[in-house]
Amino acid sequence: MLKRLYSIAFLPYFLVLGCTNDPEVVVVETPTIVLTDIPVADRLPAFQINTNGASIVDEPKIDAQLVIVEAGVETHQGMIGIEIRGSSSQQFPKKSYGFETRDDANEDVDASLLGYPEEEDWILYAPYSDKSLVRNYLIYELSNDIGRYASRTKLVDVFINEFYKGTYVFMEKLKRDANRIDINKLNDDENTGEDLTGGYIIKLDKADGPIENLYTDINSFPSEVAPPNSTGGQQIHFLYDDPDQDDITPEQKAYISSYVTNFEAALASDTFTDSAIGYSAYIDTESFIDFFLLNELSNNVDSYRLSTWITKDKNEKLKMGPIWDFNLAFGNANYCGGDATDVWAYRFNERCPNDPFQIPFWWHRLLEDPAFVADLQNRWTTLRSSVFSDSQLQEKIDGYITQLETSGSAQANFSTWPVIGTYVWPNNFVGSSYESEITYLREWIIDRMQWLDTEIGNL
Image (cartoon, rainbow, N blue to C red; front, side, top):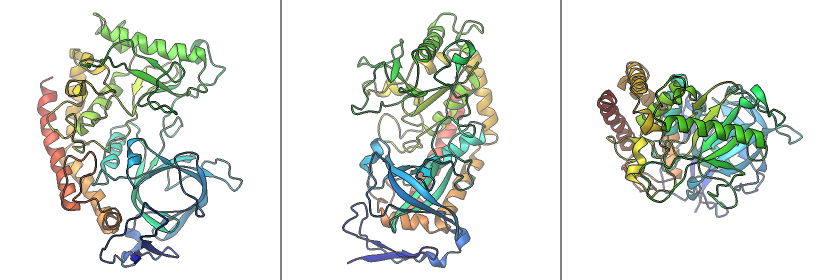
């Protein structure tokens, strides 16, 4: 028997669960939730996607229509191409989606959605194992607060073909753009002199393709320094992202791979602290420090080794970031110390030396330089008195939870996806209520910050 979950005033249909031709939707016996009782100003933006009955797949993108409603007002209507996205997250029934905005001729077109700078590529991220719903939202906002671009994000509700799909995080896709990763566009005819120096985006991540994690000289280049503490003969690989493997020229490959190799050689050398010939001649140390602090603050179990972006602009040094993919952070992973508040994330290799994806030697070596440590300590002290203070961190969480509860979206999401009280890989904590999940997140952050205060001071 089909059960109506709730009705929404600004949608011309009723939401139902249990449709047999939609295996992602789960029949759940829940009290009726009537969001029409909630003032339109309190509702999350609604993304209404119509695929005309077609299934969304993991490539290629399919044609669809998108309507966005904010506070009861339609603020966008247009064509999109949409596909399932993600790697390990695709195991979950609640899917994440990538989409591009299109014009009436079905050609890619830049658009401003929810007031963000115009672009064509966007993401609807589906928190599932992250039962707080806000881990990515929190860390990206913190990064932007300290002056390091991260994807702009907003909490939204998603509907596909008149079925509610839950609460999502609407995000910008990371790409080179004046309003995103603001670096020079490197053309295929720029192969000499100053032109050759940037911009580049490279990544430490799993390799894409028909054979997952197959690194070749077409899509990547290897580090010449073995990762510390690893026991399986693992090697670090840097993937070409922009220009990507299809567009990068041989000269550009040679330049960026040589630059990184020379940086690593300088960092590994006996003169690594020398300002003229040591590592600081190759990297923007301030970006490395901020990247380190964001990843350590959250103890991101994937940090430094997966979803790790590195940029090099024209005539500039290597920079770390933007940060990406923190759904397993803040104590949400039950392996390799991901649950702990009292371990260093950069020492992952010591805890999991057999993991295929290891962390480069960079961070151990940088922390052997007293000047780098002093700058890191000063930066931590400054941020702890402002953006990273306990009060400001908790106030951010307060704001997120107010949005989710006032809008009714948290209740609707977990009525649709009944994961509260259930282990979802790789949860460390399984709370009996949404409130307990938030309490765990809050207390984990407080404990983590106290540990970092002591340990950073003692570096």
